[in-house]
Image (cartoon, rainbow, N blue to C red; front, side, top):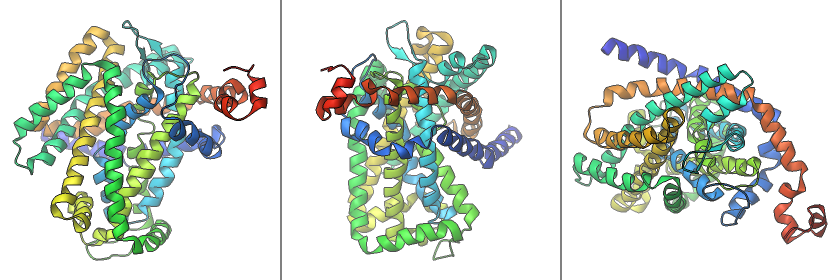
Length: 473
């Protein structure tokens, strides 16, 4: 068994090194160019349609609101890795990794947009009357070669259904370790998390969306405010930190204190990896949640995919990076304890108990929201493969994985997690590239039709736009 685990680990490390990064980042660059640098050209408009329209009612068909669908997707995107992943990238790649993280996230916006648009376009209603979609649907329905599409869809759906079981267990380990320092026994933490998650996930997408649209903004704002407190206390370091980020990205970082130093290649490798993982662009998870959204056009919901990347990879990860860099803890803590950097930085400004408590609460909420949503993702894979009845049974298996992860016993299987995840990501990225023409077609349709593009401004500002769309009120 040890030899098998070692072999799988070696393959996983290789796969998630340069091959996967080249595929994901290269795919993002291809889609960015093919979409006409869409995420940059239309960025102000996209922000008005998302940040500026969170509570606005949208016409169209769907099961939940556009914002609720976006927060559901964000619930899995904003996870513990936003807190511990960024300092690890800085510890191994230096401050320059942050710039490459930003660049990768911005490029990945095109991938996320394409995923969401195709998810909406190829979605369908299930036997219970809810809208469902995702890679398994657009791969099987959108590719011209139906046999190839069905094979790719099956690979994605089955692999994702399996990998989520272990992902749930891994998230449970993080939650257990977070509360264990407070004296809570692992089994009690596992049972409590099972009950909390069970109450939500067995309520279906409407209950999940209802919880996440309240939980995600709360936990994001809590973490951002705590981070701003730390950054404000070290405000004098901000200009120097930004200079360091840009300088290190192209010249490497010299050794400093506990930091061993890093070259340009390391900054790129760790920054690109963090930008990829934090945005989840190309992993196919976001369109599963977005496909339930009420909208009048697939492209309009696609804007929320770019919104997600902005919140998770640009805002949340940047907060963590600035906390770590302005406080100076990145030079004082070795790579072995890099994950503890944010907590140490918070404690240095907010006090040991309060500062550590803020990080612990955020970690717990991030894990809770992630578990809730990835169980829904796994359920949808089972539904696609075996029907709605089997999908309900699978939920019990995922709930059980919470307890198994909390009490231990699945650690050796975690080694297979990245390997199986890679197997699911590859067909999704390849499928997106093959179907990119449809995304371009839908983008042109949206921006050439004033009924969509000028819909909001027509009602509020431009009389000439009202004429174009027939004075609709």
